[in-house]
Image (cartoon, rainbow, N blue to C red):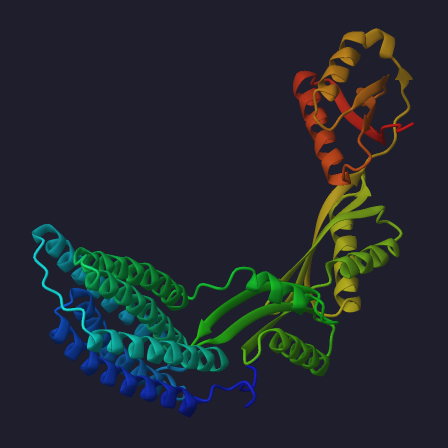
Length: 468
């Protein structure tokens, strides 16, 4: 079921974001004019690069301003998740522009270093423009970063990153002009290469973040963390899937949980509301969608089937009970043992009765299928182990080759009307599961039957290794 919209406390203040983007745009225009004038006055390539950088900042800031306006639009029929990713597209476009600018600066610096022709007048006007630019970039970056963090705006975050790079590049230009004034004009071109390298590095970081968001990459560990939170809610039997993505800085979470099918609808709804609440506590402003799947309560159903079967005097045993969920209800399959000499018609009739009683007693069960098995009658036999020592030794070796078997300390062979029967006593580590020991037993039995067809039954008895 869909969650209600995020509370106003967590909703982004779009007017504040737009205002920050507009102020940034105006300041950038002022700086462009000042840097162009300073580059003409000094002839500095680094200052010209800075002017070009700021000119492109006008374009990227304008892109940010437009993207923020688009992202603030509410969801519509064509964009049911809103328009938040317009900001990520804006950030990616800024990345591409900045990398292009850095390559241009690097090429110009290389040619200037190669030619050695550089007439630069490191006058006070150039120094003044760079200092003012650094102060403006630092203030602007701090303001944009604060608004971006509070309003979760990736476009403003990209703009703030851009202006932090401007601050460092301006500092590099300032150092370059200082060395030019001391008589080292090549430092101006070297400073330009440093600016280009830094811009590329920052652009790659910014672009990677935008691509991750556009590709719906979940933050590391977020799915596992949300799954753990949801699983702790009373009534949630299982968390089957968690999907997280971010749109416009806002998390969107889809969670599939399993609830017992015997839980009333109103209680199931309360459980989903609680899951939504605890997720929003960890992910403020999250748009949470919870999908509920019914849990068949297989363990409980198995116990109920066994109880019904034991009321049938002729049914000696039921096992291999399996419960599967279908749109129309639960299906149950089971194995039931009947006397070996009972005719099929009688056994089938008793199985039909058992199936009807199971469907009548267990809610939600619409079909039961029974596999008929003969009840084996115990046979009296004599100990013939001494007469079959080769078989006993071979069986012991097969058992001890199994990785689960620690030691095989007894093999007993008996002869009855059925044929040869082998009982093997093996030791295994105490922490092994029943499934692991059963699998080892099956391998021993299969190998014995294949090598010795006259052996009718093999029983492997496992016991824990004596730790004393």
